[in-house]
Amino acid sequence: MESSQWIHSLLFLLLVIAALHLLHTLTVAPRLTVDHRNARLKKQPDLPLRFRSHDGTFKILQVADMHYGNGKVTRCRDVLETEFDNCSDLNSTVFLRKLIQLENPDLVVFTGDNIFGPSATDAAESMFEVFGPVIESGIPWAAVLGNHDQESTMNREELMSFISLMDYSVSQTFPTVEDIFDPTKQKPMTNIDGFGNYNLRIWGAPGSYLANSSIFNLYFLDSGDRAIVDGFRTYGWIKESQLSWLRSVSKRFQGQLLNDNHLADFPSFSIMHPALAFFHIPIPEIRQGPVKGVVGKYSEYIACSVVNSGVLKTLVSMGDVKAVFIGHDHKNDFCGNLDGIWFCYGGGFGYHGYGIAGWPRRARVILAELEKGEKTWMGVEKIKTWKRLDDEMLSKIDEQVLWDRQSSK
Image 1 (cartoon, rainbow, N blue to C red):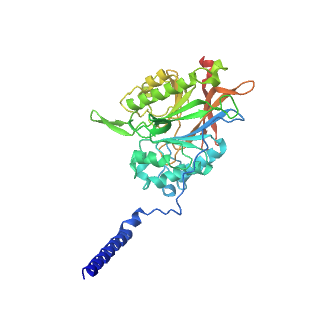
Image 2: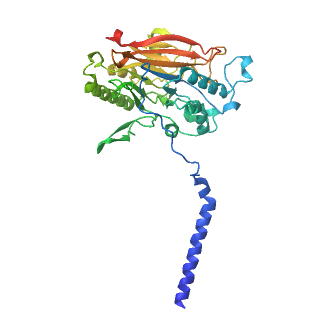
Image 3: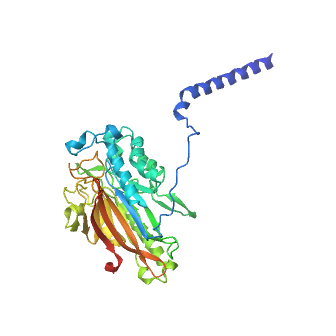
């Protein structure tokens, strides 16, 4: 009798467990289910990034302030009356596709306000649309955040994490550092302000003596969104923790250069390799001026933080950064020089962002060129830039040289 009762009790317990499992499956599980049939790994870009072997160049397309909303239902701002009825976010998408086909860049860089949060009901869906054309092309791409990206359904950390996991993205949420217990491994450096601070190294051309050396560095920084300072609302700024990281990366990069045996036979290139920086919000020094050698339109008051955190001073002391590429002020598309460093606006790209009616949306192209030696490609010799307009001809304007190794000696 006791044995029979024990068996009945065990059966009852098993039935309760089965019922609870069924209840869990019918209620909680559907919200957490992943369809493994459709799951796939991220499509990885072809790495490392490197200069081209046939012409010794590395080309970057900068997309500033795309301000994407919800696609075809999101109307354009500041366009001619004759353009308005048929103008939407899709115009920005078409413009990007045309530029990728025309310029065939090695890297596409999005410098913030990629989506306009208040108009984007689903941040993830909008980002798929923003980055869709470059993902379709298979070209590596990188992004930083602006001051509007986080105003939709994701915070800044979630946005950068999502971006870093998208196909062909080389973006990072945090910079990486060597694991002190295993130097062959990298781990994220989380004790730094912001999300989207990282650097990318560009290697020499295949088949050249510098094919196994990184000879061009790209820094990406999170310039924040908004903040309250002494009771006043202002824009974000680059913090000291970011500048400290920047100085350490630059120092390490140049230190490796000094120990690079590949350069022993090339004394003219045994000096500092050039670097570029990308972030969204301009620094106060641009507003304060004087900005010299302006090429392009300076049509808008510089909207920056009231806090001067010493970005320009840091960049000058590092010595490797030759140009900085920013966004935020859509009506500015100029390059201007401050203390030997060029600061270049991308110009407003997106049709849902504010602009000037009749003034075509635009993008910036950056081209780094290697010196051609007698038998091989050498180090970076020159950095150029120009802009492309979204007109019938995709007009090329304001071409200029930002840096030339010969003239910098």
